Length: 207
Image (cartoon, rainbow, N blue to C red; front, side, top):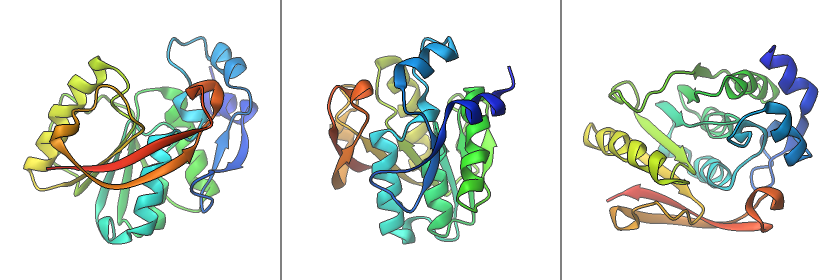
């Protein structure tokens, strides 16, 4: 498959609802695109999910979090959070996702917004977060398996002095006792993905 061609053929540029400063290649028909990918997981790269929207909004409203720093957008999907970080003044932003369609979509989306982003398509969760000053993780607690892998990585990043922020739309596997809430947003979402039109989404940092 030509992944870049697939992204271009199945999406169109769209403003992000909570972050209209950013435009992304997005799909209109969730189910049809999901079926076309022939994957078990939904096309995380083709829609601005609530956790990422909230993180992007927070970063743009609080640029001091990222200015002059190297930022990791973990499980990036569309690259939305990395794009927001660069627009807010990050020196570098790395968008990490293991889905080849995501890593095809990310540079296309970066170009739409006039920024440069590094993509990393390897699984970083088994390694050490040594290279990053800031780690941003949008909606990574959607199942227990992912939560169990993400938490040690985020703890390690915090222990090494990185700023860690999580955008969470009330997922069941977030260990809330480990985090402090910084902000909350009512985020517009695609009802076919979330069964509702808005998700209350919080920005958290480790205690």
